[in-house]
Amino acid sequence: MSQKAQIGVTGLAVMGRNLARNFARHGHTVALHNRSYGRTKELVEQFGHEGTFLPAETAEQFVASLERPRRVVIMVKAGPATDAVIDEFAPLLEEGDMLIDAGNAHFADTRRREAALKAKGLHFVGAGVSGGEEGALHGPSIMPGGPKESYEALGPLLEDIAAKVDGEPCCVHVGPDGAGHFVKMVHNGIEYADMQLIAEAYDLLRQVGGLSPAEIAGVFGQWNEGRLGSYLIEITAEVLKQVDADTGKPFVDVVLDQAEQKGTGRWTVQAALDLGVPVSGIAESVFARALSGGADVRKAAADAGLPGPSASAGAHAGDLVADVEQALFASKIVAYAQGFQQVQAASKEYGWDIDPGAMAKIWRAGCIIRAKFLDFIKQAYDKQPDLPTLLVDQYFLDAVSGAQDAWRRVAATAAQQGIPAPGFSSALAYYDGLRAKRLPAALIQGQRDFFGAHTYHRIDKEGSFHTLWATEDRSEVDA
Ligand code: 6PG
Image 1 (cartoon, rainbow, N blue to C red):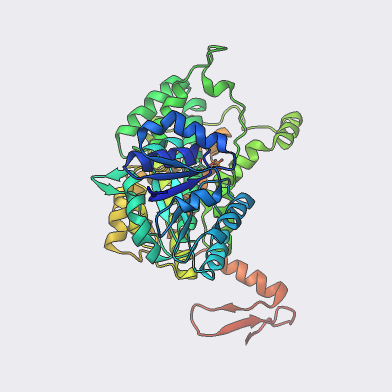
Image 2 (image 1 turned 60 degrees about the vertical axis):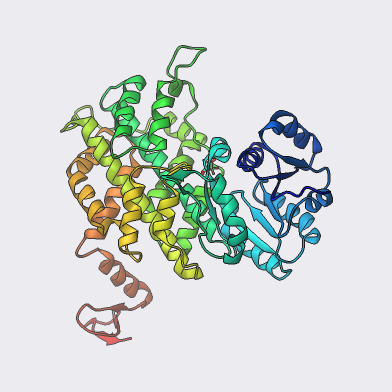
């Protein structure tokens, strides 16, 4: 075979197909492979005119059609399918070749695969890719991990197909082994939190404010012009505008109110628990989806007629639309602050040396959580890469302190009127927890010492102490 491909894609379902087309549209020759050849043929028939594709029927042909070092993008369902593809291709590859997993893999799997392939002299790059089908075709945000040297041969191709902001690609080498997939996972966790907060805003405007979905679409349209401007706010307006063709009802009223999930939000929370980082906003959003999907429990509650607040629960004491905007912005800041803190904690734990400002930079376009305010996050970390929390950066501090009265009114209204707003309320509780001079954790230490002699530290002396709770004088001893 004379002509060689710069890159190959195996797994040609919609995401793989669109990535392959994106590479081809950027002038790269793309080798194609799929478990069933039908899909490969179909791609070439439909989109062959977009660039140069080298379709291969077998893994051997596919590998032979790639220039060295070979770059093989794997785009299959995360999990055992990825291992199967690696097992198929690794024996055909040579030292220095690269396998790039562009699926939503768990970062621990990526670490394991990277270590195993390194032992064989191969580079394994776990690359987070965000932006859905459209992003894959027109410019995703790409978060590649893996060995730094692989980025020299791979980065320019990925940067070509990535989304751009002022000509700068939304793609950067995140860090070694599982760093890319970890960051993509947290991106998705933040995505869950963002979506939950937006859903709560909608619910309050509808239930407290009495606005129709079409009117709320208008509100979101306006918000999108301001500091909340983001892809998720924009598509929320579109979804709320939609009218069901069958019934003539708003689309949101004919869809079952049970949110599904593929699991990346849950992974984010599991990893945060292990790292000891309180990502309460992300956790609430995962739990809210689980609650919505708990049909049996919800039915039992409905059957039992769990009572709501008395009819006299007060009206909202303020301009509801303006207050909800403030609550949404402040809660969103908390969710992002928590997610970034988790990335920093993992970076430290695994020695990844992730630049949080670079993450904010590559999330400004292409990905699902792209938002105007990521520019401010980038600036905050550029100023101080080891910022302990975004909430202490001046822009965010001002935004949250400016929002807090409205935020409190919204959380109070939700509680008084019996409307679930776990995202808003937990974000506010997190904020109050962070700023508290004294937390009741001192009492918890006392309880632990009482029942389990777990000891405590004092504010006025060095060392560990234990109180002899069972004795009459309850004296304190050094522990
Ligand atoms: C993206 C998305 C994408 C996706 C997730 C979330 O960044 O392009 O996050 O990865 O839509 O699969 O899906 P669930 O809500 O089903 O977990």
